[in-house]
Image (cartoon, rainbow, N blue to C red; front, side, top):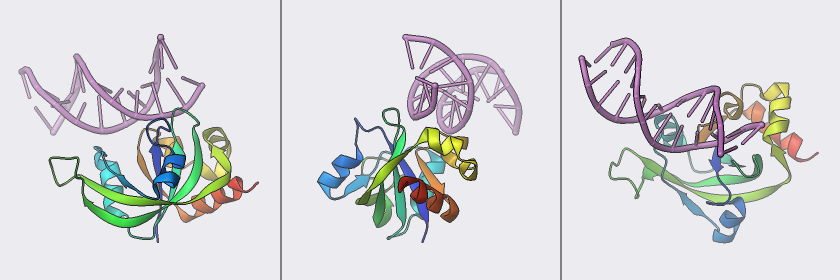
Length: 135
DNA sequence: GCCAACGTTGGC
DNA sequence: GCCAACGTTGGC
């Protein structure tokens, strides 16, 4: 099982919207690094949901329902999508500010490569965030 | 609204 | 294959 993080601007597609929709297709990714991560996602993988620009915090957990397949919005089948469903909202969203202030998370891609829209999260980072979300 | 960081494009 | 120019993202 692997852990990931996806970013979305909440006014484009928020975690609340994902809860309402029950699941969504994660399409439109046009960055090679992000695409490679999407391709590595397996059914059951857990995904942090981060609100960029507005909020700037991890607000919830999603799960990969369907592993990667060609992105229907792309004309090249090399671009891929996955299907995500909501798992739960975090009790206390974990802000970028707190993440940056936490030494154990200094290697998170949110910190080191903030522009990447799909990121990999280590098990250790995952646990640290969960701990921060419950306190 | 600004601008730094990053990725992509295209001329050479 | 290098690198300047450009476009986009996202934090502040």
